[in-house]
Length: 171
Image 1 (tube, rainbow, N blue to C red):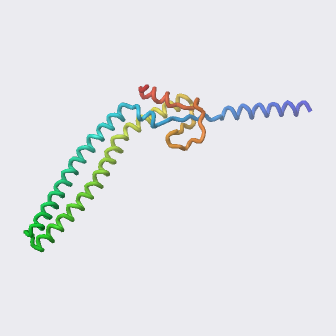
Image 2 (image 1 turned 30 degrees about the horizontal axis):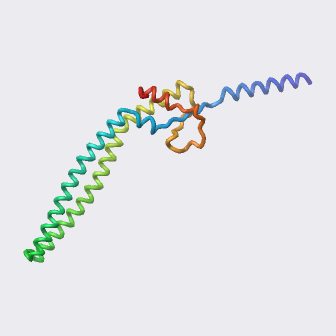
Image 3 (image 1 turned 60 degrees about the horizontal axis):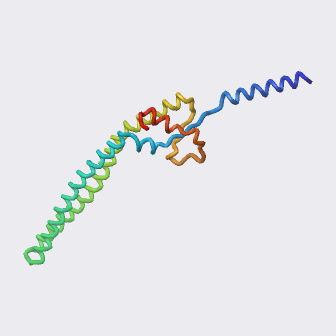
């Protein structure tokens, strides 16, 4: 009987040791807080705003040219100086200009998004590397992003945002 109790006790101790040896360590990080404090993000934001300003000025010039042509055509028609054939030609030109303006707006949005994605890739890689380093140093099996909204509960002691910021050299 005592042998059975001893064996049961040893078995329970082994299970306890095995369970604690396989304990997983989880952490989370607030990526938005990290990105908002990175100097590279502030530079990227300024660069994108400057690029957007250039694109908008070009677009505004195109809109002004369209409006001028439209107004000139309306004035000429009102004065009776436009033949039906000229009116048809001008209407077609205005329609083409309007389509080009729409296409320019679409291209402007696409170019801006592409520039943001391209310029942000090295920043995200830098942050990801810092997160991986913190995870390895802290023996974390998983690090979640609190910004993604996937975490239903997180103990604040598991927040490794400060360590990642320190790894990146930001306060």
